[in-house]
Image (cartoon, rainbow, N blue to C red; front, top):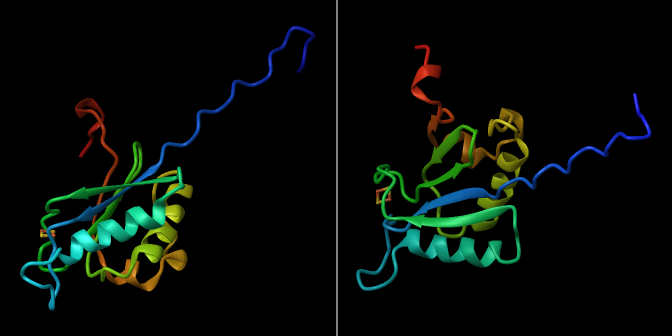
Length: 139
Ligand code: FES
């Protein structure tokens, strides 16, 4: 019930950007010995494709320990499940960012199975629950 002294609802803070992790150490068949690795090329493509967007941030990492399924990427955000995926080519930047937007829109990070592109169904390696403090762990 509104009163003359009621205040408008506090503005909700803007959602933080989804972190898109990409392994810059991943190699793919055909990578030149003296050239940038496939993972580094995908990182650069992701950075180009994400330019001007505030809903994602691209973070290159040296290894996600999924070295047999290059290129490895991941999605992470505070309070959400973290996902790790493998088997991406360096040309997958647009598809990865489109799927990162689906992740960002999901309050818990769980993208409905039907909405997931095939590469994200076949490529899933791990999902890791949101961080909880020790007293909250029940199992
Ligand atoms: S080198 Fe890419 S996951 Fe290890």
